[in-house]
Image (cartoon, protein in one colour):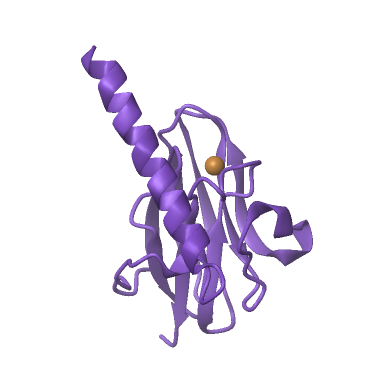
Length: 148
Ligand SMILES: [Cu+2]
């Protein structure tokens, strides 16, 4: 009984997050879900789950190699894709590969990968999981790139 109830609550939460994202899409996009901007970090520890990224926001220094450890603790594949600034999407159907600035490619559940990323223009970038349906389910976040 209990696991089923927990699962139902989790699903309700996921749906609520999805609805909240949709509601703000016309203003500033799903990335506007209230998440405090974290301190600048030269190493990111990112965890993916159904259907969210842990933390949901990251800040890195501009023009600097940043070590990303991306762990998928979910039960399906996930990825972490940073979109070009100003090319945010409001729903999955707006996604196209040419919007991608850089990405940690999809990895299977219960796996992790290490990758170095670098962004040469300061700004605020939308991050998504571009796998089908994941963005609409709430898999989005914000990458802040700041002057070092
Ligand atoms: Cu995903």
